Image (cartoon, rainbow, N blue to C red; front, side, top):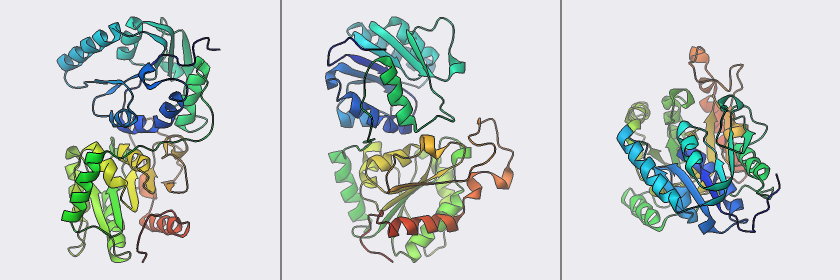
Length: 358
């Protein structure tokens, strides 16, 4: 489709889901800002994931995903906001009952939806539908998303994937104070996040503990364990696997605080989840552990400082209906030894930030 709109079209995007998804969407947003003014963009996201939009100063609406009454109230507020807006393009990148409801009511010249072909319904409120395979896509998800906009008639340039985000000043102040209070200033810093939205996306917590021991004893560095309040059991599992002589600092910070912390660490280790992509957007060297999803599709944005470990299995990417592999499941196939070997290779390649090397 060829666009006949002005050089600064009004573009509305329904882009909910999770923090990691929105962080990965940053390169697309940057290229959209080359085609239109910030005030002509409007993005709907889930409440709690809006950090990237705040850092890019892009107008957004945070949808409340709490109880049903809260969801209905949030939908009412969104409808009120949309009454005062009209769009040249409305892009539904979620394809849900709620997004369809919004698409039917929004004032837009062209409505575009994207998603799994099996999720498409008769009577879709879109003028165009772009199929996207989120399990085995033909490239990185950023490339797939960019192609959606091109097919919609918004010609985004091809090339780099700039997913960087500026550090929040208040977050930076918090991290300066945190590192000083914990006596971590000037030490090689390793941040680890053992969590993940689903159990089948988590590397065993005792192996994170083994890497923490290696970083402390061999590299003479400090380890910061990053978790959310709901991940306290995982945090306890990591801590219980540590020898008494290996200290570990815990942090449950806000997203701006974690992003600022990640901008200061020498290395981040984590599973396929939001903090992994948040760390990459802060410029941290990262090593991600993948199993049920393909790193070629959902991995951290590329570059020599972004590495992943993944053992292909006949069932990967899995359909999340349950795992029958037991001790031979995909993430358990990734060993501590190969993780250390890859970290050492990253160091030889000059990828780690570090100050002192063991």
